[in-house]
Length: 191
Image (tube, rainbow, N blue to C red; front, side, top):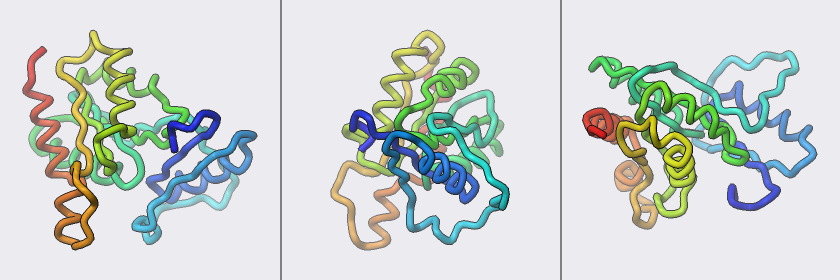
C-alpha cells in the first residue's frame, strides 16, 4: 500500500506513537492508512492525556548508537531494540530507528544515521521481494553510498508462504538472533 501515489502510510510501534500518529492522520488533508499489529494491542506504555501530534513523515531514533544503524517499523522495532541490547553486550553500539511512516519515508534521518555509523541493517517481517526494506536499501545506497563501509543488509521474513504452525511461524519471522547475526556480518565486512 505504500506504493500507492497520494496515500500516506504510518505504522506504529508504541502506544505513545499510536495516539500521536492517529491524531495526526485524522487531521491530515490526504488519505492516511494507519497500520497496526493486533499482537501489540496488549503492549503497555505511557500515553499522556494531553493533546499531542506526531508529524507524519518523521522517523524516530529509539536508541542512539555509533557503530551500526538498525531500521525497523511496527513490531520489528522491538526486535531491533532487543538485538541492539545484545550487540551492546559485545561492545557494538547500534542506533535503532523507528521508521514510523512508510510513505512519505524519512530518508534524511536514515542517511544522517548512516553518515555516523557507516553500516545499516533493515528489519522487516514482510517477504524480501518488493518490500519496504528494499526501498530503504535502495534509497540509502543511492544517497549515502560514499558513507557505507558495507552493503545495506535486510533481515526479512523467509521467502516462503507464511506457515500456520506456531513453531514454523517463529522460524519464518525475523528475531533478535537473526538481526544480531546480520549486524555482526555487516560490522566485519570491509569496503
